Image (cartoon, rainbow, N blue to C red):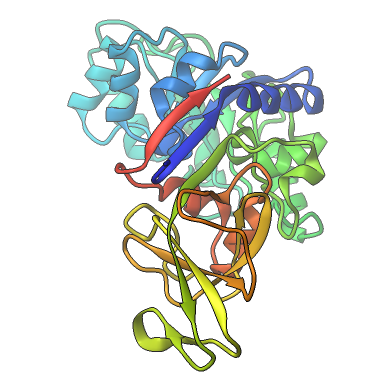
Length: 358
């Protein structure tokens, strides 16, 4: 009996990277493996991704773990460094860093580094999260070019706020501003995250940065992965641990939020928010048992969920349950939970056993 298992399909992962290659055949791939590779296991994913050019992480500790585990590919620190000690570690571990504010640029050019490092210079073209303001771009770029601490020419990047909404006017505004700012400077360029890779080919440029699409979920609003020829990498599974009769008018779960309209059977499944299954998944959220969909009913508990089987069923204790993945798109579950696939994947907790297959 499988209890709370995340089955990770490496073959599907590699397939999805090839989808990226087909969409952006002339671009290099900076594969996003931050947040424990979106819940899939950063080291196992990094060791499997031989068909990418570099890895992107958010935090220094993620990069250090990868290097110390023997990962040789380029590793880009997307949030950069936060003090001079971190900058020294970046140089010693031969990492690459994003610079996204003036203070980081100043600290970088004033540092006495043991060896030069590769730098990515991030611009804020309209998302207003992190990145140099447009008026800071030229001076920062000029300070960095040819500096003793820098290895090669900086790569220039920005991030789109609304790439998952194809018709949003901010997309063109950001793309046009980025192109304008980069018009007279050298260096490789990068705009495209997963959504832009899928929908905005003019953003592919020298580097693309796939994240969610690499793990087999759609980056586009209101579409599922299969519509984009992507295969789910994670299939979250568990098992039925009880089958109960519930009479008409009987309630199920905490708060008695669901009441049976007729005599029915309920399957109790060993998974809950303690495993990362979304607590706010509502009545009717699809659950797959023996390849048949059934609706979740009642509140999600820490360790269990309950599923309405109807009046007659062959479901029994020990039967396999799929919560999302092969046969059940994670996007559907996320919509029922008022969430997104990113959050569900990253939210899978440590007590869920990961099993890797090719």
